[in-house]
Image (tube, rainbow, N blue to C red; front, side, top):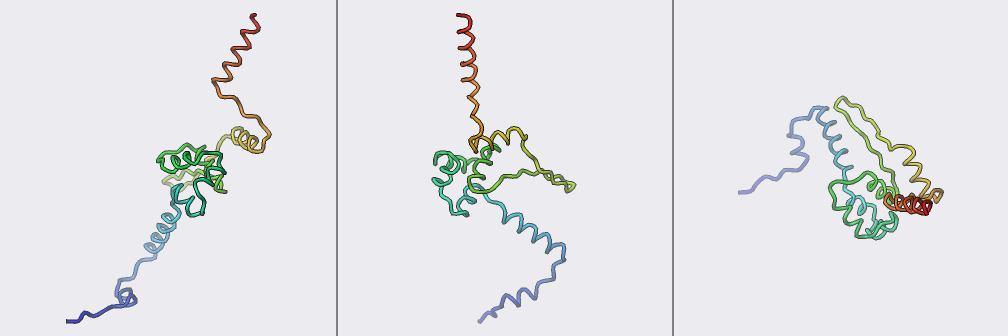
Length: 143
């Protein structure tokens, strides 16, 4: 009892031909799926350690670990990590009718962030600290 072995070419030749639209859809699916990476996979693919990423992003290594495990991210956090990896983050809204709209941040906030990175602007104090300082000023004026 010997079984006949088939080559891949024989098997492929025996399959019915696929319509061109199926081939196109399969290629599109492969392209979409091949570009899906979570932050940890992206970091590893780029050959960057958590320690290196943390240093570049101004974070602690433990923060990078927690960020990589999250399922829900703030856009500012994603932007910070992606920039530390040497890329820019873009957000797009894709509609069922085929429209693809690029979402952008408000220019003043983006410019403020860029200025801080270049050392051209001072960091604003946290809201609680600013109120405390203004309250102290008022009390001095009364005295």
